[in-house]
Length: 348
Image (cartoon, rainbow, N blue to C red; front, side):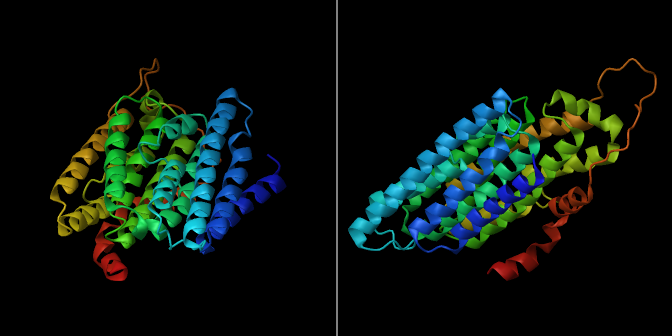
């Protein structure tokens, strides 16, 4: 892609998200979401592959449907209450419509069906943008309108997303689909605690972005999109394979790693709010995710692909890809757990 065109598209992505961040008016928020959608579509379709074009079409249709619902809900609320203010969603029909539309935008279950299919058709860089940056604007609107939404609805969305995100990833062999289901599960964790501790939602979002970015950049460095291909990685780059396995376990939420922190604090908050059954279901749903991350770790670190040469170490061609960003993200995705007390002090 022409670098000038790429710069314009990335600037538009940034502009759309910033507009939604800064808005307190439904029309401005809607406009930011639309700019965001229109900016990423050329990035998704740039390879002119039938899979990419199909994924782009599916993404456009779902996002356009969600945007129309948001506009309809905002205008309905303005008709009844006389204001376009984001925080003044007094009409139950409008607030339910808005949360449904925003759930469709970020891929919360049961509006999640487009997410794995779309991510499967994209290259890893665009998939990274879709899994991280594109979540920011809708989540901001969900956080701003959460106080006017039925708590039971948010709890059901969160529980369904974590269960389906864990369950759906179990039988996948494509890494992008596994990361899509991982994204659905993490969105569930963020939404379920939203009304009780919004700062924990932001913390979970931040750690999710660090961990997912690391996973995508590693797969891009390996140029692999299937579980089978992970068997080749250990002999090529043992150190990177070891850190990648730890990053995947961090995504699963195992204790000495960064990913454990938001899950631990969210379960603690749910227990404090007297929802022990919800907390138990969330913890069990996290075990489903742990299983498919362990599958990836097993394929990456404990399997060696069959080869006909006697040497265990194949030829290593020095890569031309920059890995400084990957190194920084890997460090944050693995080592932030000791900072939990400091982060708690900042968020409370």
